[in-house]
Image (cartoon, rainbow, N blue to C red):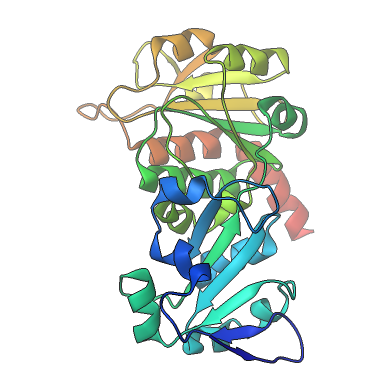
Length: 295
């Protein structure tokens, strides 16, 4: 590799060898492999890859560390401002697109990959003290749905909000989830449950109205629940498509709510359902914010 000096920001390193050891994370992008890697001697475990300019910019602006960046010349020009703001210690590898594609093993049409550091995740109790709204995911394994859920939470819930990952829920830092979320995974604190469903009971003790979202006709319609944020601190529970929430989660929730639907339709996609529920339960918050903006 060859170093190119810059007046500001990190040094740009031209990729001259595909076997450079520091490029190993870009060659081996398996989520499980990245998750257990140590970051640059910091002792913080776990790495993840942000793909594309939108997600990379979110990473650069987030609380997560940036270990390195692999970028093409064209994308470097469009991201020069963000690259210059990175710490000087960040390694920025510059590679023509054909070389970058040889490194990563696929068509790198988005032009940039950034290696983020997971750090130490928060505990559920920490999130419960700070958040006004929680989204609790049980058994969600579809990375598209997970990315969409984070984006909806960021757009529709009062801030600060957070996510609790229940059993069998997939990693939101998986590259596809990050991309679908438009980088909003990096804005929202996330904790993984350790004691299920006892952790749900802990949310009730912390002052949350826990809501199990279900298509069950016996459940209360959203509009009739009498729950609204920001007056109520809400924890919305959603389960995997098909099986839905487990009986343990349903029993631990204080409320069971449903979205009224036309006859002949038994359910909505889980990400759509959560967006509808958040928009309905937080409608007063949205009107208040619109009024403040208008003034």
